[in-house]
Length: 104
Image (cartoon, rainbow, N blue to C red):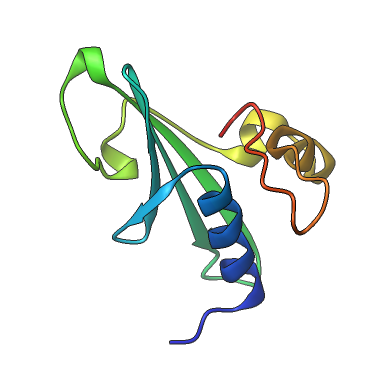
C-alpha cells in the first residue's frame, strides 16, 4: 500500500518533533510520560484524525503502549477545536517546520 501525501507529511512532522515510530504509532518518552500519536483515516470519507494519548509512567511501566490502552486519550480536534486551532497547537508554520507545539 502506498503512502499518500497526508501520511507522508504526518510522518515527517512526527519524526521532526522527536517521535519514533513503532507498529504504526509514534512515541516520545520522558521520565514521567509516554506520548503516543496516531493518524487515523475515516472509513467514511477522506478525513484524517490525529489521536493523542498519554501513558503516565507512575501508574505503570510500558515501552510502547497502544493508544487505546493509555491513561488519557483524545482526538486533537477535541483538544483544540477548529482546524486553525489544530495548526496553532501543533505550531505548524509551513511544510518544513519541525516544531512539535505544546501538545507534542
